Image 1 (cartoon, rainbow, N blue to C red):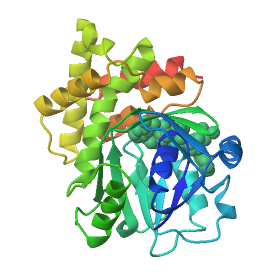
Image 2 (image 1 turned 90 degrees about the horizontal axis):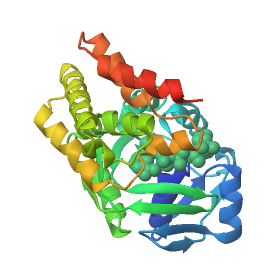
Image 3 (image 1 turned 120 degrees about the vertical axis):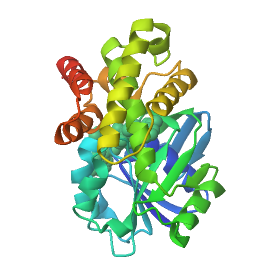
Length: 300
Ligand SMILES: NC(=O)c1ccc[n+]([C@@H]2O[C@H](COP(=O)([O-])OP(=O)(O)OC[C@H]3O[C@@H](n4cnc5c(N)ncnc54)[C@H](OP(=O)(O)O)[C@@H]3O)[C@@H](O)[C@H]2O)c1
């Protein structure tokens, strides 16, 4: 299968490297990363160790084919520009797979691509952009894919099979929107709290006051989800959040990593979007609103 990775940073480069074992993969990333890949190959370190020769370009303008699958792995705040650039190579048969976190990506992609062509995915793999040409695979995880209408078509099963064949453990969900909401709810407490307190994920359960805040944020985010038609139980989302905190206790969340690098965070796509949806539905979203203020107040 011909695959283009749009936004070859941490997670995009990891998936690209693995998928290149059995597919034609082209990475689109920043110039320094592309140059390093051309010189030394793409290196994956830590949980996976790989060095792959893989085509890489710094612009879709240099791509001369339409891929079967375009995997979108830019941060949420880059989605609009990335998908607009990618339109040059997207044809009616190209599937757009977003592996991004955040609750606003699908809406942005749907503005330019027919929703029938969009697949959403969540992944619990952890990847870290170490330096140009080198990605750390910090945690092995599971990936879930789903069509927006929930249908398990032959095409989505085929894509999941391709992922599994290269070692990316993947299942197809009939309710990927719910999966994305669960991920956003989990992230709605872990990401901003670890960023503001500049702590490892595990500290959120070591400090009893922070544990209470985690529970309160989870409950509020779950109420916002319910008001938006996503049927979830507080008990389930709190339990899930604590499981993630325990299993990633030594990690720095992606938001904290962005903050430490002086980069923009995805706070607006996670907590900011929860606030918008909550307000639209008349649901209290003050915890999420405070978290947006806190992270924004310490960001550049
Ligand atoms: N990393 C993980 O473990 C992980 C796991 C699950 C989900 N996710 C989600 O996946 C998404 C990507 O995360 P990430 O950690 O991989 O981010 P990342 O390392 O910042 O990767 C995105 C890359 O895309 C580049 N980029 C942005 N716009 C581009 C464009 N138009 N053309 C070419 N390159 C472009 C960025 O460059 P600049 O930085 O220079 O702008 C960056 O190198 C996020 O939504 C994140 O929440 C990440």
